[in-house]
Image (cartoon, rainbow over all chains, first blue to last red; front, side, top):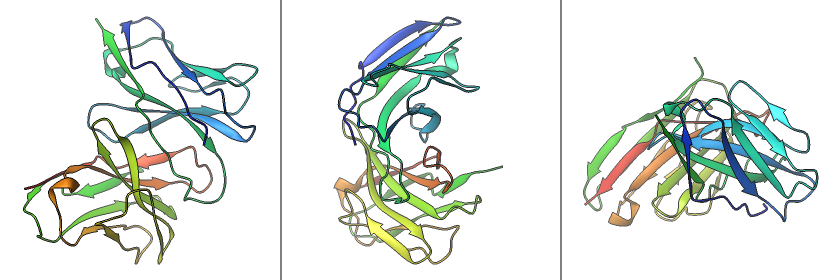
Length: 113
Length: 113
């Protein structure tokens, strides 16, 4: 799986959009970009994933650059409960469950009042 | 409600005293996995299972055993715990239809003295 690079930490004002960047310059054509988050000491929570096109769901939007070397997770209206560590992962989809998630350091997002 | 449960949530034990951490899912998923999380090391896979009676080692299997006698349960066994197994443990259940969604349990915090 391609290595991803994220800033260590970011701050965001409550109610504003949080834009979390991720670099994955070595991503291969069949690797998806996944985002998970982990609120302190809780189990990681799936947010969104995408391959080439931008994606949106009830939690967030994912913008992937045309060359797929980077992406941005957008939380449109951050709340205090969005304070968490956000993980960007490049993962090849296959039928082998041995291809499990590997979480790196992630970005610690602090949403401030 | 779809969920993964783990028990116990917190455990303090002594070196060498066998223990089992249970994991159960109610989503009829075939794939399940165990991770440990340590500061600075992220989430590392211990063991995974693709189906009943099918298990395989992850990245850090030493000192652990698992079993998968039935689809819903995937217990983690520490035959002779040591202090370096002090960690936060997560069980995950994976939807076969989409690798994108791994459901994580609430975590088990283990301290081995």
